[in-house]
Image 1 (cartoon, helix red, strand yellow):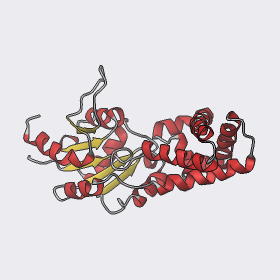
Image 2 (spheres, rainbow, N blue to C red):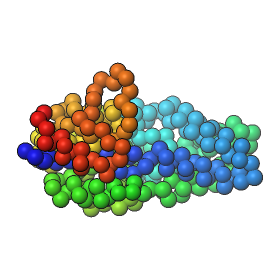
Image 3 (cartoon, rainbow, N blue to C red):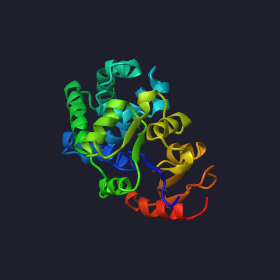
Image 4 (cartoon, helix red, strand yellow):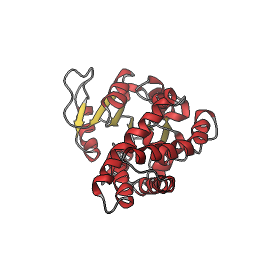
Length: 266
């Protein structure tokens, strides 16, 4: 076989920026609120990240969020539109979480202002949504791959939030199958999401390849079920328990890497 029967892509920080976009959203919202005091704005960015993480980890929903892959910053902007299970609990808690995180972060920099906290919560949500966009060349990379075989998206996170990202970034009709870990209440690197998406594609693990930015969630998880894995990254940390089958610096290079993989014996 000279080409895989299916290619599975990760979403966040593979096809579209997440960490970089979220950091920019925090900087923009805090800079607007403290336009005359850049030092306070920068300090507030640090404190909101810390306070949000602190509250998120202390919540009863933390174990589920860790399992599925829902971050504290997603709680600051996402809507949790799913009405069932833990998503319903997160939706009910979210207004309190957002308000408290921003209030505590402001107090940390010496500001006690409930109105400003509410304004910052709204501003950050707007700024985060404004940055839901694909990496340059990512849509073309998926389309090019789809010309040769079915392509799928396998992403960790809460279903409604991830699907909002998918639509906003222009990937709504780009895939033959999509699975969000929240759909099955289990996230990568657990074998279950990989097996679910392979079943949707009707493909054996040995005939499929995973493309993603996480050595643990994407590379190690895929290889454990028998898939090959292309890592969108850089230098592999010493002692990491798995080695990608190929490494690229950008998802636009994935197709060439996959071609090389399938030309060489396994």
